[in-house]
Image 1 (cartoon, helix red, strand yellow):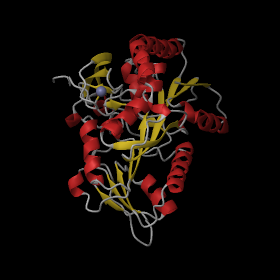
Image 2 (spheres, helix red, strand yellow):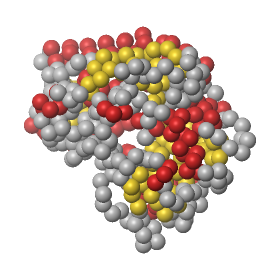
Image 3 (cartoon, protein in one colour):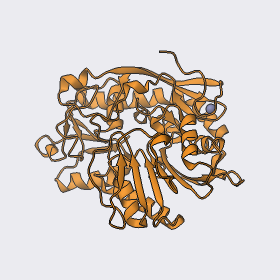
Amino acid sequence: MTAISRCPACGGTHLSQLYRLEAIPVQSCVLLDSSAEARDFPRRPLQLMFCDGCGFVFNALFDLAMVDYASTTEESQHFSGTFNRFARDLVAEIASLYALRGKQTLEIGCGKGDFLQELVRQTGAFALGVDPGFIPERLPGAHGQDIAFQREYFTPATIATPPDFIVCRHTLEHIPEVGRFLSEIGSVIGGRKDVGVFFETPDVRRVLAEGAFWDIYYEHCSYFTLGSHARLFRRAGLDVTRLYLAYDDQYIIQYAEPAAGRPPLAAEDDLDAVRALAAAFPAKVAQVRAHWTDFVRSRHAAGKRVAIWGGGSKGVSFLTTNGLGPEVAQVIDINPFKQGKYLPGTGHQVSSPDSLTDAPPDTVIVMNPIYLPEIGAQLAGMGLSPELVAV
Ligand SMILES: [Zn+2]
């Protein structure tokens, strides 16, 4: 396919290549029923480009048709206590900033609806969730009403009630045409001034700085820093009113409102720093890839059992980016819906933590450092004390 030649965020043409992979699984959250099906899962190339004009990073070879979000995916992180506390605290922050009782809230990309349910519980808002991957079930809402869901991709045409508050978490990174998406949000706002917008999106600045290749995978076609995120919204006629990093600085939290001439926030001013990180990234990521490949291969060669904790996108990217396979003995995940299923690319079967008792690992690599305390405690509770490291 033809590579995208203009920045989807700002339309700029001063683009440079940051990173290229020739064949990665087109979905990394998909659950597969057999190892053979998992190994044969479709692969496509990825070419990350950096826009010098706005700092946006995107996969110029992304093909949305390859990703089926209505298929059996399991993106919910709501099995982790750490993530649940984070989500509850975010809802409490939203509730402290916006009086949403009786107001209409729209969540774009609501997943299984857990966050919207918590928002409604804490604020008394009415709510509509839109997501092609929503599994129809009735979730309790406010005032004796249920939360409404539409199992489809977001489009302004099907939003019957204009929302007073818009939530969009971990969705923007899946959207290739981010400029167009923001104009669709603008048409749902429809010129009203009294509307709040809340976005939560992974931060790419840390990925660039750390060479964190496991955070780069096919479904994520769009990558933002605080500044490029805010610039996208300002171009769409929104003021950014609150902007910070959360969750161990992994996620961008951004509030916005229809423009009223507010000045840019200090956190938005990152373009020069990000240009420098982008220039250094090709060498950095090559070094980090070599480190982890050697880390795993040397332990395997010494007869040690290496396990990966985290059977989600990061784990799939960690394995497939460097062509690791039998060197990793086990992949562990606490999400019961993943257990027994197979990872696209390598075909590893995902096991429950309990399985480690039967085959104790020598090394456990945790795919997200924020879960280290939680996982360390769980291993200790099982009487296991392997070498425990996080990417
Ligand atoms: Zn741009």
